[in-house]
Image 1 (cartoon, rainbow, N blue to C red):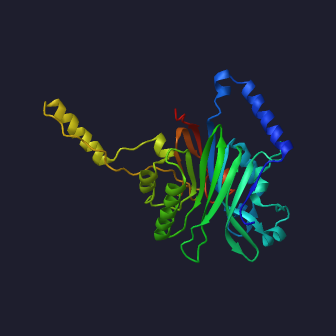
Image 2: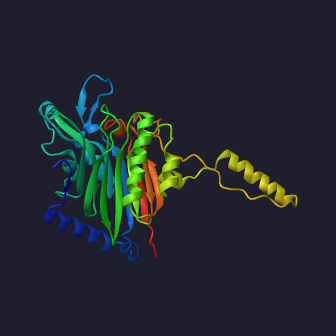
Image 3: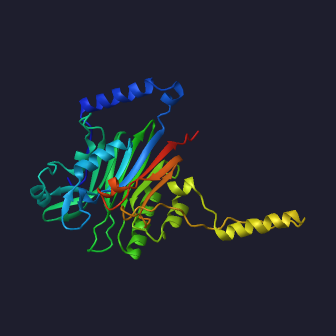
Length: 325
C-alpha cells in the first residue's frame, strides 16, 4: 500500500514503556503525573541527501540525520521529503538503508523501534517515491493521506494522523505546500476545508511542515479561520504599529479626562521563524501551528552541524496539553 503505519514491535514497545516508567519514578510525583507535555519538531530532511558545501557532489546524510533526530528528545516529529524508496540512491551510496526512510529513522541504537511511524506517498517516479511522514512515541490510531497537488509539475500531499495522548486524540497534519503562491492558497483552502469538516472544533490539533510561505501570506487566514496559533507567535506576540498608536491615543485621552473611544483589535502579522537556507536562515518557510496546547518554548536549530544535513533548519516546540475541564 502507498500509505502505511509502522508500529513498534512488542519487545521494543515493552522496553520503551519500561524506560518511561523509570524516568517517571525518578521524578517528583507532580512531574511524573504530568504526561500531557510533549516536544514537537518539524523538519524537511531533503530525502537524506545533500550536496557538499562546494556543490560538486551529493552526499548521503541519512545516518547522521537519524542520530541528530534522536538527540532532540521529541515525541512527535513531522517530516517532509521522506524517501520511501530510491533505487538509484541504493546503488550509488554504499550504506543506503534497505528499508523506507521513516522506518529507518524510527530506530535508535538503544531500542529497535522507539517511534511508531506513518508514511504518506506524494510523488512517484520510475526509480522510487517520496512523501511526508510522522514519527510518534504515542500510539498512532489511524492515518489518511490526501493529494493536494495543484498542477502536474509539483506533487504535494498532506498526511493526517490521529495520535493517542493520555485519554485524548490529537490530530496531526504533516504539510508540504507548493512553490507557487496561487497554488499554496488553493492548497491551504483544501487543508482548512478538510479540518473544518472532519476535526471537532475543540479537538487538540497540530499542523506542522514546510509551507514554503516565505512572504507570510497564509498564517493570518489559517489562524483566524480554524483557531490555531503559530508557536513562535505564541511566545513573542507582536502588536501592530497602528495598534500601538491607537493604544497611545486612548491612554492620552484618559489622562486628559476625555472618555476614550473603544479600540478594536486590529489584524496583525503572525510572527514566524527563519529556517531557510539552513546555512544562513533568512526565509520563513516552516511552521508549527497548534490548538488546545500551551506553548512553553519554541526554537530554531541552527548551526553548521544542521546545515550539513538538510537545506532547512528544524523547528522544535515544547507544548502542554490543556485540560478541557
